[in-house]
Structure formats: C-alpha cells, structure tokens
Length: 120
Image (cartoon, rainbow, N blue to C red):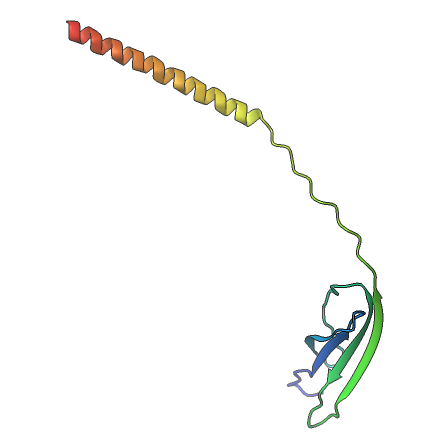
C-alpha cells in the first residue's frame, strides 16, 4: 500500500420521492475504498442514492446506487418555560423601599438642620 494515500472523491446524489435529483455532497474514500456522508432528508418518501467515482489514471470510473424510504419524523414537544421565582423580586423591592425611606428621613434631617441654621 502506498504511504501517500489520499483517497478518491465520490460524488453523492439523491433522487427524492418528489422527482428532484440533486447532489448532496462529496465523500473521500479510505484505504479500503469505503466512504460515508451525513445527510438528513428534508421530505419523506422513497429515495435513490447515487455514488459516482470519476476515475483516475489508475482506475476506471464507477458508480453505485441504493434505495431507502424515509417516514415522517414525530414532532418534538415544545419546550416549556421555567416559572420565575418571585422571592428575589420581593426582597429587591424591600431593599429599594428601605433605601427610599432612608433617603426621605435623611432629607428631612438635612431640611430641619437648614431651617434651624437660618433662624439661629
């Protein structure tokens, strides 16, 4: 076996149940001539897959085909929202309320000090 093996390109095409023919990708063979390609059909029905090897200086072109059927996938359940806990919101409101009361009290004290200075 050669030490500089790079694999051969195989073009993968599909004929769908709707009659549309299209190329879905290119795969590279391994040292045994095997190849693979990940693909998710977008419609259900019968499919014919075509694999075409264009040939090289050492090998003639070749092709192969296979068939399979795709059923409709079951719909997945929609995700549900996680309820938001109100505990942190209530404590935030308590802190904000306490801060506002403190600001009002400090404002009254400052105002009282200014009024007493003015009269003194």
